[in-house]
Image (tube, rainbow, N blue to C red; front, side, top):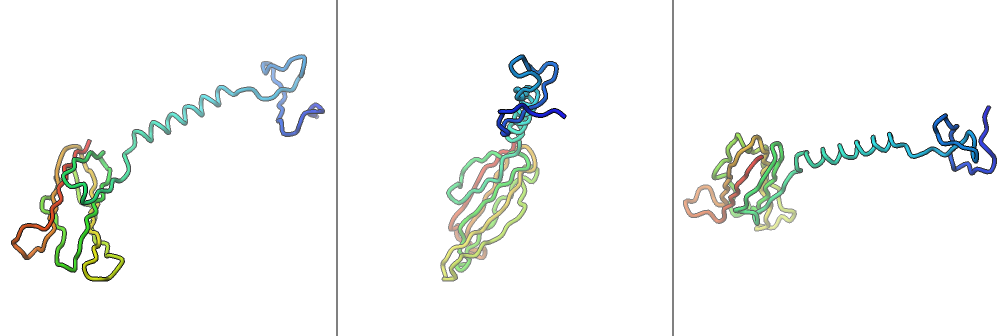
Length: 165
């Protein structure tokens, strides 16, 4: 059985030297492991691959609100967009899609209404829509905020142009 030379701290891991390890007359047969070029190349390749995949992957979900009306938005195919607009159902006003987006480019996946935390009349909640980019192209979406039974101009409007690449 081969033992480690005396006087070397146990924290330093020594390995038995091979024929090309650099063991010399000062420390015959034992050496501290050298720089592992192959392992470093593999680590670098893994890190480079991860960075490339992260930059090439779809961007994460995007969330927009009423301040973004009129904005032009770019999405990647498969990317989702959540649109949140303040809404007060107690007044009879609701958000409705006035112009549907082109389904070859963008579809409405889900929609709903989040009630306000306080139950006092006039407290606003949020109407929301989740949109997903389905294919390359350009489209627009328009929403109107008003009372569906009235024939007066809408209280508010929201429009957005979307380009999917």
